[in-house]
Length: 137
Image (cartoon, rainbow, N blue to C red):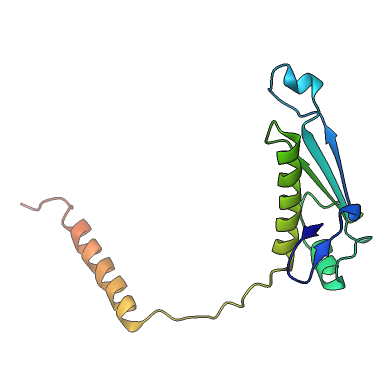
């Protein structure tokens, strides 16, 4: 069972995981041992609350297919178990990221003193550059 929050969790039966051979360098081990993990999670068929499903399906992430299936491949470690945990953690982070509500940005104005300081610095910089001109005889 993958626990997302206090109220939400995903049963293991809804997450399909199987081991595949990892890509890239790894010597002889990479050719004979299936250590990478391929995780598939169908959002529409899951027991997640509707709010979670809607938010997940609305985000544009390369790991989510048009059919609403999350596909994650984990092959960082040489251990199959570590890759399994990493894939589950990535799924958990994706769901948390999709459902976190951004706080609305409050517009602010620069203070009078910060505006004054900025203009004074601009004037000072301009004077410094003016002194670099040609010397008149």
